Length: 183
Image (cartoon, rainbow, N blue to C red):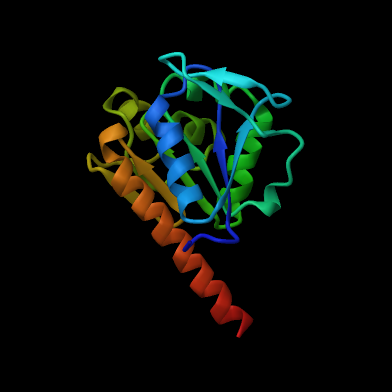
């Protein structure tokens, strides 16, 4: 229960990659985090690339971004839809600027591109959007997980164990830093 007391937003839209949404949701719940599935509209159900349903808990335009410790952007084709909603981009930008964990996998960095948080950073993604990541000002690295400050990126479903381990490590470090500041 290492993540008890932590609140994590997982973004959702149609055509999400099944494993890239569900693996983190279940993994972080297993660690004690409160995981909130956030969509661009009032709570509804979105379907994965393979038709698996994912019900959202909240609307990106009505949530309190300050109440979250991290945001995760799964891949699939959903990120191309997500980045069309200003509230979803605002959530990512807000958490990024606060130094909170912003994580994206596969095509998820498309949302990071549109939120303009990649400039000057190191990142990875699906090879299919490598040029988008580079054109957004990041140095693209072909490895299973890349962490640059509070930004964590991965390439594909096979990288999910490393992706989740890195997110957990970042959240644990943030907890230790907060405890040290509190004295």
